[in-house]
Amino acid sequence: MPEEDVEQRLKAYEGRPAAVAGLAKDPVDAAMIRHWCEALGDTNPAYAGPDAIVPPAMLQVWTMGGLSGNSARTDAYEQLLSLLDELGCTAVVATDSEQEYVRPLRLGERVAFDSVIESVSGRKSTKLGWGYFVTTRTDVRGEDGELAGTHRFRILKYTPVESRPADTPAADSQAVDTPRRPRPVVNRDNSPFWQGIRDHRLLIQRCTRCTTLRLPWIPGCVECGSPDWDTVEADGEGTVYSYVVMHHPPFPAFDPPYAVALIQLAEGVRLVSNVIGVPYDKVRIGTPVTLEFHEYDEELTLPVFRAGEEPA
Image (cartoon, rainbow, N blue to C red; front, side, top):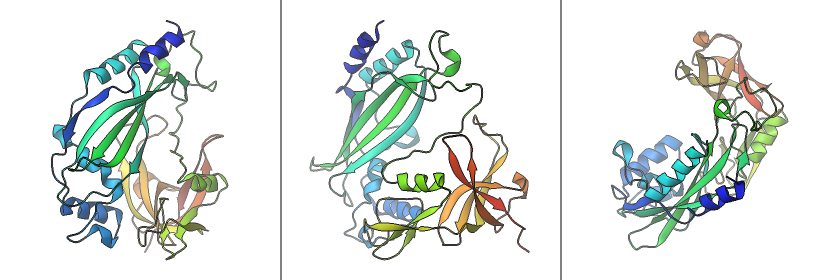
């Protein structure tokens, strides 16, 4: 089938419902907000007390149904996925999501939400293989029917390398037998951080109003709410604050077992990374580490931490 005919068929699904509209299973409640804020270390007073508002980033929380599910996919969305399967795009990976906030939700509100297929891209060549990006948009509304925010979720339906027809060129001319490490998601909020990593500099955000440091990078200060910031460069010293040893599942480009550590930097912020220089079973809480930069390929540089002597 000519590509223009394929794209026309796919585009016909744009604007059609992706999931059955529904109501949140539970009203907005203080306990859920408290758990969220404690997990993220967010002490903004606007999120506590009888007049609390909901942290904007919790928008999706109120639409999630838990293990029992919430709203079912529509026939239109199932048909779209089936069509992509027929085209050979049998693999799927979530690529990114974005949210827009219109007004804050408040305690006691029970939100309503509906989801549509917002867009289907043309055929794209990616590192994973060729395929199509499908974006769904979920509108979240308060009890008054007023829009509170919008959540967009994007997936890539693609043709796996092993099932790609022999006459279809690979998306990347490099050897496909060597698994590549996943790429970080770079966006407008964190791109200076990743540019710093490429330059072998670990940059920490600093609020220019209250001087609070933050890592990972986020758009605003969790202490005073200011959107203004500059950066300080980490000196590279730290300790292992916590760690886990990954045995299963085995991911391509990773060789389990290996240790994933939460590093407490000397500046006071923390960063998830790998510990090198010692076997995975020798990593310990409190082990001093020093920052290094590992270039995995011509595109990917990541910060890692070399272990020093174990604490006494």
